[in-house]
Length: 465
Image 1 (cartoon, rainbow, N blue to C red):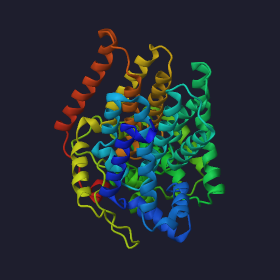
Image 2: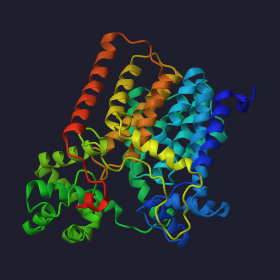
Image 3: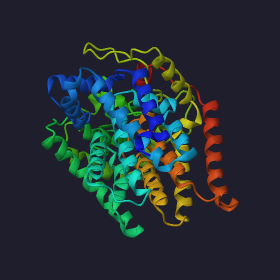
């Protein structure tokens, strides 16, 4: 039977068509509008991924606005899931496609933004790898080339995507070496690729330095300074530290006040003029001098971005239903069903399904169960997906400045895929109990926090203040 007559393939293609019809021509967020302005002006910087702007420019002959990238990310997403569903077959294929159509996941895929581009590219790469590896067949050169291109694009389209892409890239090796050697290879590859990405962005892709690489040390230095009041932290005088405190410049939710609030921006102006290497050196000294303040600052943000002990309606979660107001010709979806769909997504992101911390626990649980399974193509693919999720989530402990739910969507999705593919043997109670207890504890404590803590502001201006 031709692969195109396979029920999972046909179902996935139908879902692709429905997704295109509902959300056409794609939804433009604030970041989308900024990047489209770069496309129109042919002037790029690295605040947003230059590789995405370059791809948009290359595809602009197919039509104006968001439609070229919207088609690209939706097609890559559903084609990848089609191949994966065909490879695993049966009821698991149905479950896979149902997960792919989850309202808040598909709702974010309708937004033309770097995170959706990354998910589309990684889905296609995973589907291609699974199509051959789950059958223990070598990947033909064309499929291998497409998978490598998808992984490369995904790596460059998000600053911390390398933590997700490297574990998946290990699957391209036909017969991987031992577990330890493979793990050490991943650990060594990640910093190397992170260092290489800047020359690629600035040299090969021609993007100007926007100062985005300063945001992480600025956020952490300000966090340590506010918690300690120590003027030796980055050389800020006591009066400047008091300004940071009085204007609420440091927030676990996001770094925005430091860069967008006039008082906060003026206070950190000296930092913003320093070379990136000096800022990271200052941060290293401050963290060594005040390790508990640094860890408390990072844990507060990690808790915020993992959406654990936070109030109900924690911001930056639901996908927008309408385009950001603009004069660039970026239109709203033509179908009224898009607004209803995004409304359902907005309600679902308030449920535990959208708590990244629970998916971290599920990935750890899956990884633990996978280690006791006999070696097989299914086990290797599931391990790669769990590691892809866990490496990315671990990166937020040190490399993160905002709590957007969209940053976690691939890790959540990869964890669900890993469980579907692994299909572990029915575990004994002693193997099930630790994971179940951990998830139950996170659920109970997270629910108590949402009941007990006061609700956050709903307007951006109020969040800033």
